[in-house]
Amino acid sequence: MVSIPIRNIWWLMLYASDLGRSTDPAQLAAEGLPEEIPDLVAEILARSVEQRQRRQLSTAFRQREAVLTRVRGRIDHLTTSRRQLLAKGQVACRFEELTIDSPRNRFVRAALETVARLVRQPALSHRCRSLAHGLRLQGVVGEPPTRKQISNERFSRHDAIDQQMLAAARLAMDLALPTEEAGPNSLLDPQRCVHWLRRLYEKAIGGFFRLHLNQAEWVVSTGRPLSWPLAGATTGIAQVFPSMRTDIVIDRRDRPQRLVIDTKFTGVFSRGWYREQSLRAGTIYQLYAYLRSQEGRDDPAAPWADSAAGLLLHPAIDTEVDESVSIQGHRLRFATVDLTASHAVLRARLLQFASQE
Picture 1: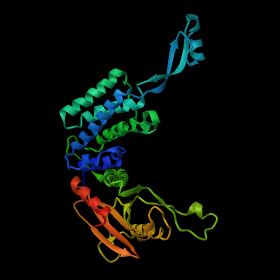
Picture 2 (picture 1 turned 135 degrees about the horizontal axis):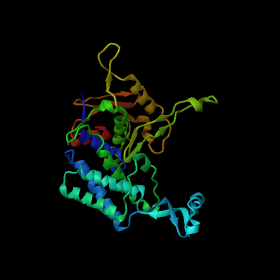
Picture 3 (picture 1 turned 45 degrees about the vertical axis):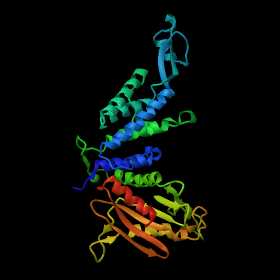
Picture 4 (picture 1 turned 120 degrees about the vertical axis):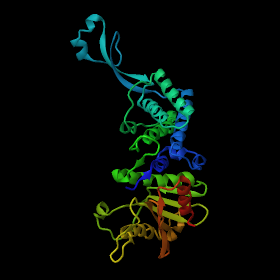
């Protein structure tokens, strides 16, 4: 049974997360053991919580029902009448109350408690537990929300500082998920969650290039829609014609170089008609369409699109494939990245793809 080390699953999760966008690339420059990624996330989370506490944690409104001696909010006439509260000088009310015990803060408290059990450094683990206990003492005592519930959180200008804290909290909660056995060396069987890994792999590759490529020299776009050079279209074609959307597009600012990357969470080869293995024809057609359809478009952001290169990037286990060919002025490359390799090897290989060396 082929498995991907949890260490590399965590690296992919870090690059795919919102936290990866704000992390210092220098912090990811050294290869580490599996425990070091929870330590990194815990440090960022703890620092964010401490900074937020110095400026006061954000508050939120919550609905409350209570029997009061004065009217507050709306009167619950049914309860007031049924319990004959007016005769006692009381009234049942429904009102909104400003509280620190918000879903956001409860989620952060739960993340601190979770990541404290994952980190390797005793001092950092104690720091996270102390921060979680401090939140409880301040009144953050409710049950933590689910990931689906916390995904509805919206940020305004006055609480934008919470974004990194919540991104770190999300990743801290996720780090506890992809294990099948207790202990630091657990492995994840990709056959049990292929769809999740496919989406994770696609987002992580885009996040990696966005984080590691210097923005002064490179422009990294993910999920960019491409338009077809359509002509002579019938009335209803717009409703039925498929759209195009690339996974990753990387442009150099200082010289004519564009790379279109399409990530595929499949084997790079399949069985051919007359041979044991062959590059997958469908993926080649797709990448070819991405490149050829953009020729002659006079793209001001990348006038060199006519000579853009394409890369089909597949994951692999203990193997390496790197083949290329030029077709009508476009260089097409078919390569793999070994998901069992160390982080240093993965980083060097991905950066080498961007440089097209």
